[in-house]
Image 1 (tube, helix red, strand yellow):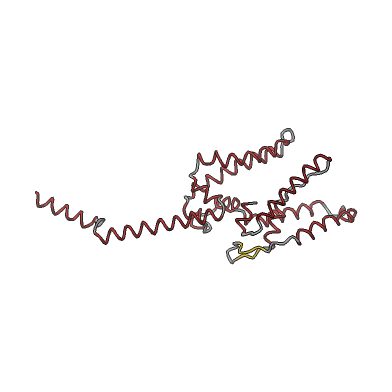
Image 2: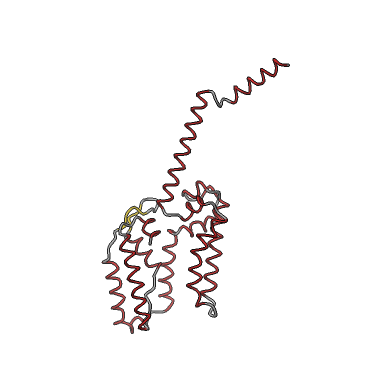
Length: 246
């Protein structure tokens, strides 16, 4: 929730936390009654958010029209579909799978992991203009992408192996301590901040970096004006003195 609200400029962050709380409460009650659990539909949520977002020419989200009406009507239509099961059964399965495939592919360009994966096949000069491409070397970016791919393949393998598929949620949960404790052993914290930090954290780091660079430049210019770092003149004076001593 925090990453979604921060990255897309959503203002009603607390309401999303309440939604998750009610979701968990409903799952507890459903579990006691033997009813199906409510599950997160990540891809439709991303597609829904993109459809309500106003973006600039670079595809960055400016504002999002936050409303519950679209969710209400969409879920109402899902409930009404129970009245048309006979007609829905006539729809070929490949058509339904194609809809899900389209929803997944249409949401991928906005995912940073996919953007970094495509960078494996790009020249560094063609990298998108992002803070992490500006301050982190291509090799380090690829290393972090491989780090994520390893865990993705582990989760995918467990999910698709019937004998151990029951531990799939546990494997997904392991990604959290891996990011918190394992990743800092291979990457600097400022690199992790730029690669997968919240947008506010990235902006703060970039502003601090630019401010430090301006201060360093001002200090060097001040020293040069004062003659403290005029290395060319100092070297010349040293050579003249050496000639005189000789």
